[in-house]
Length: 250
Image 1 (tube, rainbow, N blue to C red):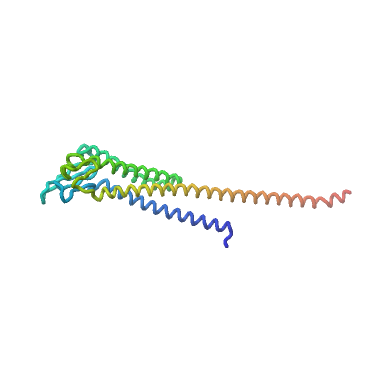
Image 2: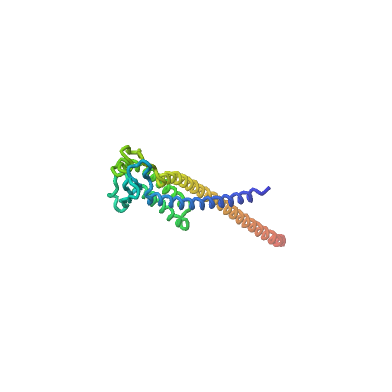
C-alpha cells in the first residue's frame, strides 16, 4: 500500500487533472452554446407557414417574410434589428431585446476566458456562471414573450383567423424556436457546472494553502530543532572544554 502522504499527493494530482479536463469541456460547450444563441437570434425561422395557411412566409425575432398563397409568388420581407419599429408587434420587439441580450451575455462570457490568465480561477468561473444563468433567464423571457405577438395582423394574415396569442392556427413552430428552447436547458447546465467548478477551485486552493502551511510549519519546526541541537552541542562542548581548567584551579 502507498504511504498516506504519497496517496494524498496522488489524489490531489488526479483531482487537479480532472478539474482541468472538465473546465476545458465546459469552455468548449460554452462556445457551442454561443453559436446556438447567435443562430437563434439571426435566423428568421421561429414560426412558418403550413399546408393550409392562407399565405406563405415565416417569422423570426426581428425579420419576417410574407407572400401570396399561390405558387411562384415572391415573399415580401420586412424588419430589421436596427429599426424595431418595423416589427408587427411590441412582443416581437421585447423578445428580440431579451434574446439579443442573452447572446451578448454569452459572447461576454467567452471574452471572460482571458481573465483566467490574470484573475483567480474560481472568481472567473463564478462570473461566467452568473452570466450564463442570466442568459438562460433572458432566453426564457424571449421564448415566453414571442408567442404574445402571434395575434398581430401580419401573423394572422399568414396563419389564418384562428391565430391568437400562444395559438398558431394553421402555422407551425420552426427549428429556430425549438433550438432556443434547447438553449435554455444548455445554459442552465453550463451555469450549474461553472458554479461547481468555481467551488471546487475554492476547495482546491484551500487544500493547497493547508498543505503549504503544513510544509512551512514542518520546516520551521525542523529549523528550531536544528538550532536547539546546535545550541545544546555548543554548550556541552564549552562545559567539557572548561572542566580541566576548573580542576587545575582546585
